[in-house]
Length: 218
Image (cartoon, rainbow, N blue to C red; front, top):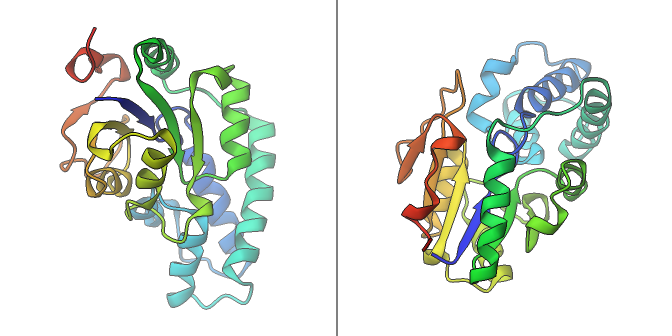
């Protein structure tokens, strides 16, 4: 294997609850009151635009999906400032381990459905800027996970064959995207997660259980 690619929300940082809280709050403001956090689990790993576009088919709220995303982004930023963000236990150490592999030619990246600005905020916040060769946002692509576009684009940026890439994902949509791209996928099952990770090559319940020697030469 020649590259290690990280999803971000739910893999590097524990932000999924904040994202869902912000999405539901905006829906309520638009007059949609019958959508709850549990109803949004199936969208985990996708872009906010895809979420609002899909929900608008059954809940025809007046604002455009793009306007809803802007409102959600504003609220999400406020929630971040109020509550802060915490790394997933063990991920920061893993990122440094994969960064160390770069001396032997391994490439590293983040491929997230979050916006560019938030991805950049996270890597700066945790002092990880020098640990990645590229940062890729799915918001810049026409198709969201489970479409493989983001992972194929990341492999192209890294100049690595997709079949030589290992992906770390926590969502079923993300895992499907990675596998559709022809990549090896490690699934991280967070406590309480009901995501279907059966398509993954390896599933761990702790980040610390990931053995890089399974994929890369020591």
